[in-house]
Amino acid sequence: MAEKILRVLVTDDIASNRTIVGAFLAHLDCVPLFASDGIEAVDIFRREFPDVVLMDLMMPRMDGFEAIRQIRAVAGDHWVPIIILSALSGEGDIVHGLDIGADDYLAKPLSFPVFSARFKALRRLLDMQRRLSSSLEQVRAVANGVIDGIISADVEGNILSVNRAASQIFGYTASEMVGQNLRVLMPSPDRDAHDGYMRRYIETGQKRIIGQIREMEAVRKDGSVFPIELGVSDLQLPNRRMFIGVIRDVSETRRIQRQLADDAARLQRYHDESEREQELAMNIMERQIRSDWLHDKAVQYAVMPARNFSGDVVAVARAPDGALYAMLADATGHGLAAAVSVLPALGAFYRGAARNVSLEVLVTDLNDMLCGLLPPGHFVASALVRLDAGKPSGRLWVGGVPDILFVDDAGQIVQSFTSRQLPLGILPSAEAGVYCEDFQWSGAGQLVLCSDGLTEAENGARVPFGRVGLAKVLAASPRAERLRNLRQALTRHLAGQPATDDVSVLILDCELTSSGQT
Image (cartoon, rainbow, N blue to C red; front, side):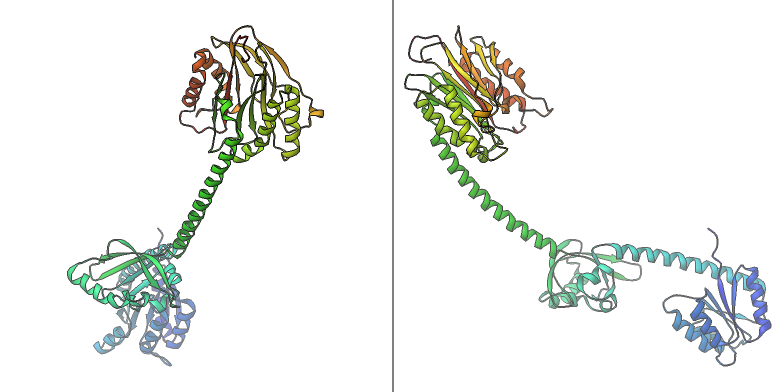
């Protein structure tokens, strides 16, 4: 690294002396600044702040002794070398000059080799000072850049230094804090016990705070008490002992914690209230569904909610003549809101079955009622079936759910009935039309209805269960075990992944019989 060019203030009332010293400095790659007396020297020092001062002692207006005193006062904590150049050789003059602030002495007439050697040594000292100052500035910049407060104190508890964050935390300026005892930052009773604690630790080594982080209270300049986290280190230096405290104001953290605790309590109350409301809604829903008909020997069903409450509904009813009515409904979304959407359809479904209406009339009534009740964007995908009493025939309607499948006793898919209608609740029946399909069978089998929550259920690899998975389970299961095996297969497919939609399955037996029931 290239040497710094030194600016040197040369003060001498004799012009020839200034010229000689200036020539010496030019050979040493220094820039001279000239003053003819002490007053001029102090003025130039204030303006230029040179790196080195060469000072004659005997001068008019202001002698070198007074000039040295004033220059030292101007320089303050910053060290600027001052070298006396004088023909005075008495010990008293030399000692007096060094006592008031000079750093070295060179006798006139000057010897260039001695002058050069002294300047080379001086340059090394200045380089060391510059590196030390740079290091200290870096340390100070780092300390001031830290968001936590840093305070150093001596063994008496007197504050030696503070960083910017500590000043901001406590509301003091740095100058107000330095020199004060740490007690001023503590509320009672810690303030009263602090000196005893410090003395006990120094004498016995017994720790309360040293070497650990503790939460305690502190006091600001305005008298307000606030919580802090404090960590204290005992620093043993070659010539002194210091304590370094790292302080973090945790007022905001504690406020947030209290707020979070209050929010958590409110959420818990809301959750508990929501649970009670859902339990009541589920009870009402269950009362609307005729569970006795769901236990019909010709019926197997499963409803698996994605949340606590399913938006899928299955319902079965017998007409007075024994005809079997069945409905699988999947409302928009899932949970309580979806269940509420489909709830009004249950009453209409049971009333239609009691009147033994045709499937077209039942679908028309359900659709027109939901069109009048549901808000825009909400609908109910459904599949409805009516199986005739004592005959291998019936009718089906499919609107927005996966295909209804008819499987034989071996579980093979014999026939599929695809959705050809809009879901219920989108358009009035007069606009949408109602199309039902006839269904007949010549051998015993089962009708399988399901919601898209089954076929679209994805595992961790985003692979859906699909119709292929459904067909595989049906073909591999005896008719009495198909529903149970289907639930197990879905659980294995999800492999711990939560279902994203409600799942419902309804299986209806189709027998060949001459009795009044299928």
